[in-house]
Amino acid sequence: MSALLTLENIQKTFHAGTVNENHVLKGVNLSLAHGDFVTVIGGNGAGKSTLLNTIAGTLLADSGTITLDGANITKHSVEKRSKCIGRVFQDPRLGTATRLSIEENLTLAMNRGRTPSIFSRITNKDRNFFREQLVSLDLGLEERLKAEVGLLSGGQRQALTLLMATLIAPKLLLLDEHTAALDPKTSQSVLALTDKLVAEKNLTTIMITHNMDDALKHGNRLIMLHEGQIVVDVSGAEKAQLGVTDLLALFQKNSGTELVDDSVLLR
Ligand SMILES: Nc1ncnc2c1ncn2[C@@H]1O[C@H](COP(=O)(O)OP(=O)(O)OP(=O)(O)O)[C@@H](O)[C@H]1O
Image 1 (cartoon, rainbow, N blue to C red):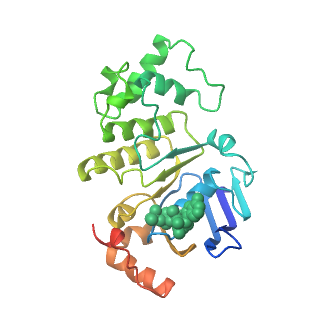
Image 2 (cartoon, protein in one colour):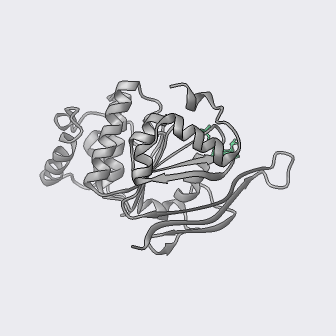
């Protein structure tokens, strides 16, 4: 089957030609099949968010090619890409409009890629659809369609953001440490919801995490980034058999260095 997403030799340098020059992505090559759920792990500054930003278009790659579903999107604006790429960030406040109600936020999400129609009437059919979708979050939000999103807890808000990012199934879902700001229990429930939505909608997904257990437990494929290059890429049965110790050993073997980042190692 043809790849859904292909990155070919992606390079990104910040502050090029200055004393602060920082070559962050050093020729990243990656190919994702339709339905791949890839977890991404790596130390601080390895280039994980930069990689997601170049895919989403928040940053443009200096060179290399990004192909999504057969289209060369390397130079497309973030707005254009957002029509087919859903994204959830670490900060629960980023994916939703605080002063709008749950149903207004969901209306925005339903109209992604079309002319904003927040002022269009929300029909009973829309409300029934929203309720149906909200039931799957198991947070009782289906009874609170008119509640302002700013009143929700971080976990509720992140669950809603996830639902919004996938309401109209995106070609690609990018999760940038989307559970890192939540307490451990809420984080696990948002991850379970992630698994459910990804499976139900067969979404091709890239999820950055700092947690090795989560990286191993979720998805069908795991990559480790080190100094702007992919040093570990395991999938399927090979991934399923790995434990944290095996992963650290693999990282050391392939990168020639130990992973010393406390935020990854201390869980
Ligand atoms: N917009 C930017 N302008 C300048 N430098 C940047 C920018 N974004 C990232 N960097 C730098 O690029 C390097 C990689 O950052 P990035 O956020 O991609 O790493 P990361 O692997 O996601 O790390 P972390 O786990 O700490 O979030 C860092 O040195 C960072 O300071």
